Length: 138
Figure (cartoon, rainbow, N blue to C red):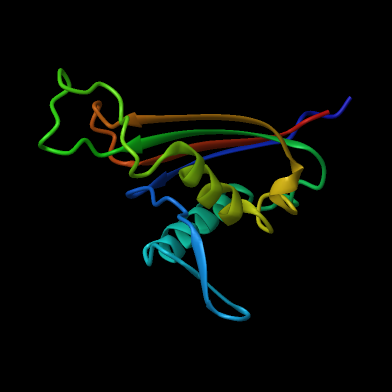
């Protein structure tokens, strides 16, 4: 029996949500956030490094992601334990992550069949970023 393939990696830096896309002209699609390209490239390089010497996942995969956001200095832990604000909402953070991994870790984000995602403030001073695990499903 072969071992189940799995990669795990951490991306350091401020997570960027993939906001709405707009089309100012026919055939041209723009993202609202200019930092998105850099963030997705950073994720892609971390994934490539984690996959060194292994093939892209071709079948169904499970993705686990734990986002760490910087707590604003104006928000105490007592005032708000979790990042319950619209900025960097969990689905848009996840969309940026899965799109960045498409074509690198797995063929397409349509291969993701299990998804576990958390979004927390970085109260343990690890620094903002995301911890990612991609595992093949059998």
